[in-house]
Amino acid sequence: QVQLVESGGGLVQAGGSLRLTCTASGSISSINSMAWYRQAPGKQRELVAGIRSGTTNYADSVKGRFTISRDNDKTTMYLQMNSLRPEDTAVYYCNAEYRTTWYPQNSWGQGTQVTVSS
Image (cartoon, rainbow, N blue to C red; front, side, top):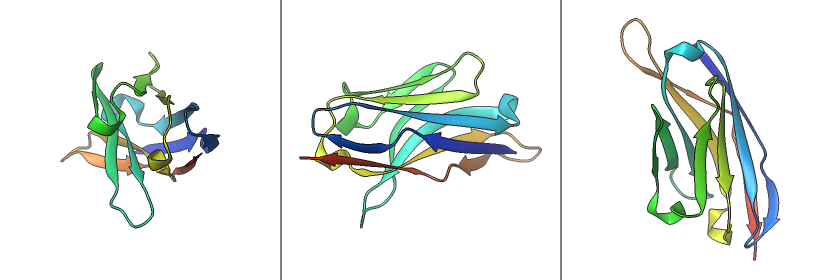
């Protein structure tokens, strides 16, 4: 199993920056991919950015502003968020897909609140 803990959220003014951190523990070597999702009030959870074997992908709304990365030891993932907008306000969740004996499983962190004021 894989356990995830996020940190780094907070309140920032529009145009500012934040860096989110996701620390993984447990069966690190079984992780196939990791990602950041977010959920704003009254909205569905959406993919923000993902990383798999060094390849990254981003939601159109954050391209050019957010950067996802992962440490070489694979235990920590980051989301650098620049030029933040009020519409980026949401709870941000760390996700990991990992292998098990039968089929891949997903693990989620508890979420961290990001609030961008105008």
